[in-house]
Image 1 (cartoon, helix red, strand yellow):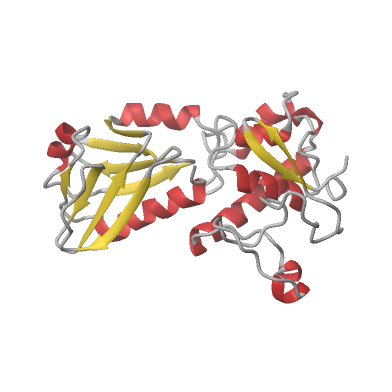
Image 2 (tube, rainbow, N blue to C red):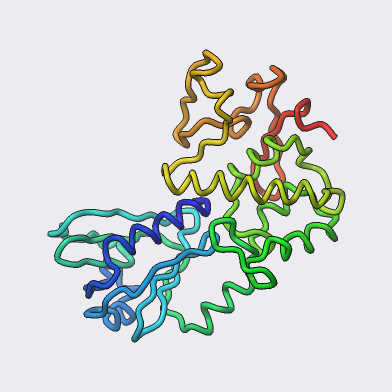
Length: 274
């Protein structure tokens, strides 16, 4: 499932190609046909993301709410668009660009009120502006974490606690701060949480900028350490993610893996000992 930086990048891609321009919307698959007909001829007013949720705004109609889930993906191209396949849930096109959405978990036309309800049930997103006392206040996440017996590794994946963090950022930010993933949330200090949040903001912004996840510090890059670059379909240089049974870049110990919160957890017992 794409992590939050990917969804924020998709929002920027929509704004760049379609904002202020009337679009033609179709649903070759048929599941979004009625809503697509309402969108045709309207300009995209804006696009935004909250965690793993994408929102396309149309002033006269409302919002297209998209959640890619495990199988959703986008294809982008320049006009003229080729004939679509019958797997395309939503095609948006102008005289210059088109995009095809396939396989999303959610693609629905919603109202302002329904959109706000989604924001309220999600935790703060490191890539959205901080709203002190509002829905995107990191202290809102801290209040839940500091009262919880659940492990911090599980809490970081709970989108109601913090939105947009997936398995890669979860593993990597805990390693970067030397935190045992099995530490209960209530045993975390406020200083540790503040540092985790600030690091996620920086790492995820870089993820949007480069369209991949890199989490190693400059002194631990392949060039700095004289080691081979990572070879993985995920891409990006990381400390522990998908490096089970390999040597830790820092201590040389073996990276471990286990199932936690229905996802594979990766960590270094030496660098992240309690």
